[in-house]
Length: 363
Image 1: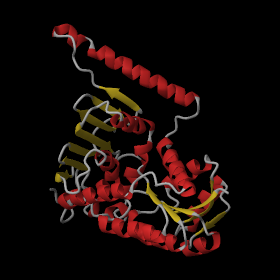
Image 2 (image 1 turned 180 degrees about the vertical axis):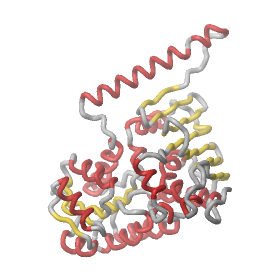
Image 3 (image 1 turned 90 degrees about the vertical axis):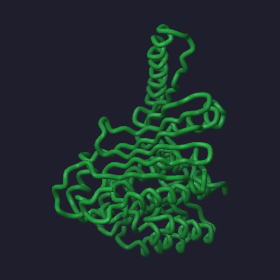
Image 4 (image 1 turned 30 degrees about the vertical axis):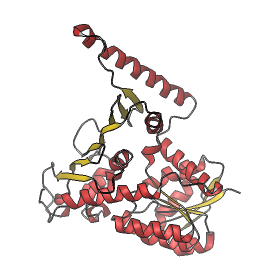
């Protein structure tokens, strides 16, 4: 029997969840819920979902879903998750998991106490290039990881950015770290795979680059972050930028044998080539070898596209699929709880260092 899935929170990201669940044979969305009934209704109508609610407890009692996807603002994640666990449900929680690591600890303990499973929306970690990166690291192709650069760009003038800047009551402004905290998981979860220390050295600087024009909490929102993280055997540099163009999203891993650049926008994995021929000739060749790698990666993407495998939410699909398999097979969930907690604790320390004290201040 397929898993019965319910979704709470019918904003834009919920569309992606519904679409990717619809591609799986072992699950079906039976209901959606939102405090604004119209939001739940429009999602249900567009995707032919049988039932919709504005009362979460009523949905749980009536539908008795096997899995609940929580795609609401992070301030509500813990409370909704605890209620879903009481209803006997497994959890897919969007990032950030909670407002801070204390909430994440409470949630993980509750999940384990209920004998249920949980995963978190670290979708880019399951995109094809991220899976390939994990494989070459496991096979020792890079040698020992020495340093990692993780860059996550954000478009303040895009659909989501405009919504945040247009209203000082947007829920993002109520997060301790604002827009940075809402996106920082994407950068941090890529470096915690290489820095497993419980207490790495962290130095973070956050600042606001845009002009102050609103005269309210929006002016206090930081929009740039630089963080250095140093562990026992590897270091990392994390960047969040709302102003760099084009909007980038990549990770670069420097190993003792080789260095690789993974681009999540173009979905490519490119090795840096060591100069093996001395003199000027040796400096002429690298652009051509780099071009050959880019062409090879490009044709891989063309092949995926021709097979209908090149999708925007490829990572989300893979993550959901692996999570549902873990429920059905009794295997470990795709993201270890220790990794989820490590990401949250690193984020706590970064946000603690950059958090503005009052609107309009910079640190």
